[in-house]
Length: 326
Image (cartoon, rainbow, N blue to C red; front, top):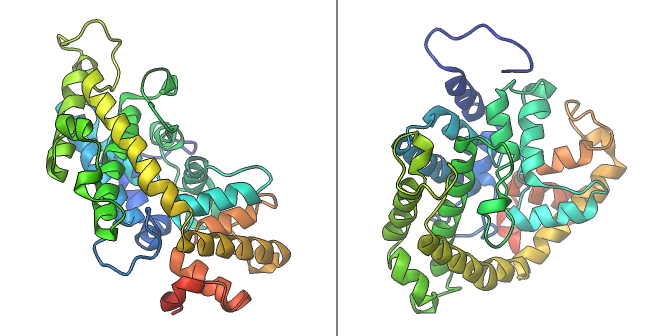
């Protein structure tokens, strides 16, 4: 169902239409210049929010096809799940959350982006199923299986929650090696013993385990009748994933949140928030909600645009990002 009924397309299913609308949106294009974890890296091979999104979509399609789920629905959710992310990744999200009285969560902003902000305030008119998956894709730190799965979330939505974690854990680890934050020998050996020693092995192990453990969602004879149908991992692989996730928080994510670039990113978000709030004539007309207009405008910015605008407001505020003042 869509909020505004539409005539069916003669050559595409409804979720294919949603996927196409997301791919052709301005918010999707801007993901190429938004941080994943490492803020404004100089290397060409670091993951961006766009390449992360594409990896999530690829993993989600693989799992959905193997489990005979709706690939188009899973892909549309995956492609739209981070459209509302701030510039500078989770550092930007934390800064925005501290500044905005009503708090900020990128999953809520992604939903708001497709419902209200795209197409000059008209929204994309996506199906209920895609919007639900986008809204509920976020995961708490620690073990996000079991009771933490939002009630009523579709199997495809559950696939995307898991695909998101599989993608970011593995590509963020490769970026951490590239940045010199961690070495292969630093990784928890017990987790590697289960998941594999190479990037491709770890991704394959996680994906194959999800398919095997979640087989009951196909409606065929399940391999484990003790579990309710759900997108799951075996206890062994789940424990290894959680161990690797805890390692990444301790050695990569929290470290990056406290670095020089992170401090500069927070100053940029704070500078923009104060200035835009005091000069609301700067806000494009489609951001017409008086309470949320400042957040809508800043959350939609790329890293590059945020840096340039902050420099115009307060020269020198971008600090280590001077090379990006273009």
